[in-house]
Image (cartoon, rainbow, N blue to C red; front, side):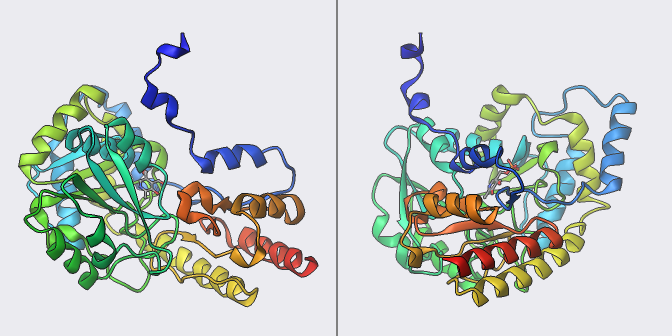
Length: 382
Ligand SMILES: Cc1ncc(COP(=O)(O)O)c(C=O)c1O
């Protein structure tokens, strides 16, 4: 009966990150720097709020958009941190992770033939969802622009089919982000055009040395802001995302969300409330540790001769491996086999990721030191 399965679904492939992870899972004594999730535990007070919610029988459906106080806390969070103003009444939706917020957004905005401009290399989660919603992903090569999708790169790709631009900054897999001026330029470019911006800011709390800016401050009416607690509060498994947009858009996204999941898990919502109130600055501790690791790994890589753009945020480095004259897949495979270190081939992040590998430094300093030693030894043996 497989022939009856929706052809769009059949054409989608599993994420290259997972594929590579599964492939190397059985090789022994490998330090894996492949996964993009914090290595910290969810803060204790947040875990306790989840436990309390269960004990208090907070186990029923909530409002579709999330319980009101949580929506208030979410709006307060983005106002305090990034100067964004949204109404808790009708301009925020609590979703099942940022992933579901992205899916609901594309399904609400796109129709057959709509084009979505995406920087490349990029997180692989957008393309399948765009295609399922009938849209066409249009990748823009950012490799010669410090991995930044700036207004001058976007302009040539805008046409009457362009419905949306994805701005995923700070970026997975490159860690770079856009400055306030670069965001303003993009806002000017698309202002009053029939184009939305999906601004995926899931790493907004993990920025090093630079203040995070959201394009919604300059282009509120056309922007859908995606955020969540997965990275900021080390809550990947709780599945709490946040979506902010003007009421005219949110009211339609809410319908898709409602029929999809009814609401985010009530227990996780209570934990999220604790995180966004008493734990509003919880990311700071983790950020300090990430920054130390970033400095260490970045300098080790540079010392080994890798060309690598120094990131502004998230917890990834994306060094070039072009000088080894191997595909990123073959390079990563040799590294696993001969050095015992797993990195993700850049090709997992769309075609322009070829020639790079992604290293996640959301791992302990001990693991990072050992991994760097192993890579160095391997390179010396070549
Ligand atoms: C850029 C980006 N957006 C969205 C997500 C998904 O976040 P969540 O786990 O909250 O669904 C990830 C996860 O790695 C990501 O890197």
